[in-house]
Structures are given as structure tokens and as C-alpha cells.
Image 1 (tube, rainbow over the protein chains, first blue to last red):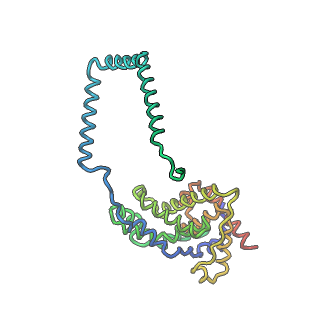
Image 2 (cartoon, rainbow over the protein chains, first blue to last red):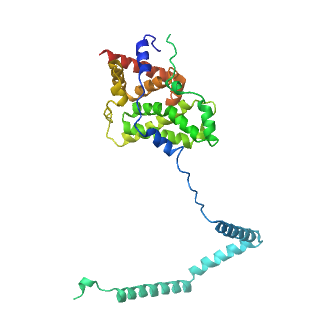
Image 3 (cartoon, rainbow over the protein chains, first blue to last red):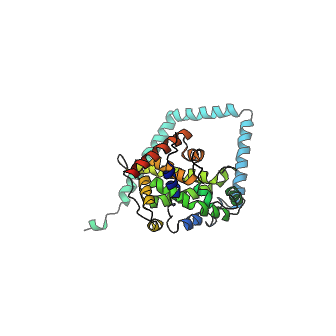
Length: 124
Length: 188
């Protein structure tokens, strides 16, 4: 594939000088690598915070394990869920919720009207 | 048969060898990496300039290449050639930039303007060399890069193929075509 009759071209190619890098290139590279200031590593949390977090996690894990290990856990859990869902479907609960929503909306409406101050420029 | 020309980068290689310098740098002697920078910054810049044809972008690619090399020095395989490794990183940095350049331009990207003669180029009195450099500048990107690596690494096709991530056969074909184009450009 290669032509061997290109001696002159090859010689000329290998005689070509390399391009001269711009001033400061080497210094910039060294400054970003070898002489880069050491990174200050900031810990995510202080030591006592880590301890508190670790203990809280351990307690939470222990509680989870204790709950799951309790024999009647699954049955009671399901019963509670069923009871909660059923309670939300009862007419009295719905009435209480509706009442709460109406009162909240009324309070918002009243407070908005009473406390909206007129703009300074709009005063006559 | 042509005699094997010495690779460009080996001229710069003196004791300790590159592998030792990498090992020293990894062991905490960061100054050893400085020696590697001194050995290869010019060759890497030359490759980037020939690929990008823009001195500013070539400078950025060179810096990026050395920065990446420094950050991932642990991934350098013992026994591998540092020059091939750093050229590969530099070539990828250039390819990324060329791809970005193409993405932001409509259609064919016009080649950047010739940077003009630098300090070393003005000192050069050889018209033939100037014509050859101009002819290389006029080559399509793939041929320009392969001829630049040929210039930097000598007739070590395997290393050129490693840098470009192409088969050796492709390197030989590209070189053949590049030289053919150069010869035509120089005779017209």
C-alpha cells in the first residue's frame, strides 16, 4: 500500500519543525495540574451531627425491624388501613371536611378584603 | 524500503523514561508530571493545532488533554506509551470540539483562517517547508491528523491507529491518500 518512492516527501515531513506553543501554555498547564492549590475538603457534616444522624437511623431501623417482627403486624396494619379508608368514605367525615373547607375559604375571603391596603397613588 | 525515521517525541525523551515519571507522579511526586508536560506539550500542541487549525482552540485542547491526563493518571496502563496515551486524549479533546463546532454551524464548517506565521515560522527560511506546511493545512481533517501523527510518531502505524481508534489498514490508506494529495499540491 505504501509507496516507497516518496523519500523526499518523507524527509521533508520529518524535517518540519513542530509548531511553537503560545507563551504561557506550559505555565498554565502546570498551574492547573502540578502546582494546583490543594483542594480544601469540606466535610458534609460535623462529627457530632454524624453521630446523632447515625443513632437516629439505628433507632429507626430497630423500630422498623421490631414492627415487622411483631406477629400480628401485617393483620393490624391492614385492618388500620381498611378502617382509615372506610372512615374517609363515611358521610359524617365528608360533612366535616366540607365544613372545614367552607370555613377556610370564607376566612381567606374575609381576610383578603379587610387587609388589602389601597395603593399610595390611588389615595385621593 | 525506507529507513525507519526516529519518532519526533523520542528526541525529547531522556532519562528517566516516561513510565518511571508516571510511577513517580502516582507515588506523590507531582513534579514528575511536570517533566512529562515539558516533554510533550509542544508535540501535543502541534497535533491540536493541525487538527483544529485554530491556535486558541489548540491551546485549550492541549490544556484540556494534560488536565485530563493528570486527573486520570491512575488509568494509565504500565508498559503503555505515554506519548500514544496523551495524543489519544488530545485527539479526543479535538474531536469533541470539532463536533461541537459542527453542531453550532449550518452545514459545512468553513476551515478556520490560517493563523499566520509564528515566531519560529518567520525565522524559517525554507520555502519548501513553508509550501509543505501550507499543503498539510489544505488537507481534509482525517488526512491532516494522520499525517501529523506520522510526523510526530514516525512510521509507527500501530500507535497512530491506537490514537485514532481505527484499523492499521485505514491508517495506511489515509497516509497513502494524504501523501498523494500532498505530492499533487506540491507539484502544482
